Length: 164
Ligand code: PNS
Image (cartoon, rainbow, N blue to C red; front, side):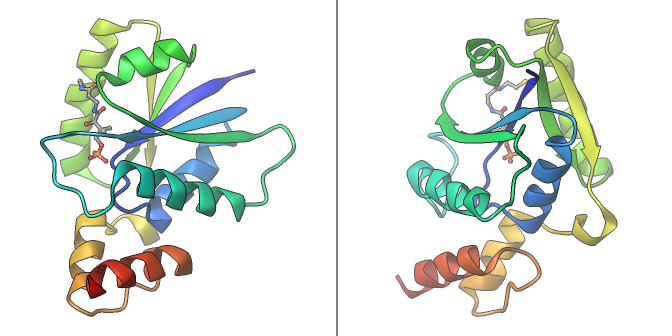
């Protein structure tokens, strides 16, 4: 069984994230979506909310029999979480050169800390390459329509936050 960890803030999980997940499931049997908890980073959704929202997304995906997806939050180093689960890879979605620069630095440092863990970069499909969680939040909080960026259920969760 091949297992990979797909880490991110997922605040919120977008259609771009969903596409990366689906494509990574063609490569790996099991993917653990790891929701990063960073006490210094302000997020719209709590880690528990993000986990629940992603679990809900996953429930609506018709997964092939041999595929499994788990969602959990983590605090600390991603290499430690990967080791804990005996993961062979980290999955990273790359939208363009800005993502690449940052991700390449992280992949390099993670490789030094954990040489057996391979970071796999999946290039975003063009139709998702402009989707940023931060912009999705901004649009929604300002009353805009985020159809095409997130699922209907996440769109509703965003609307609920805008009312608070
Ligand atoms: O969606 P994001 O905000 O790009 O996700 C960033 C995340 C959570 C994947 C990244 O910050 C991370 O891996 N954090 C864990 C801490 C860690 O391992 N830092 C060292 C990386 S070299």
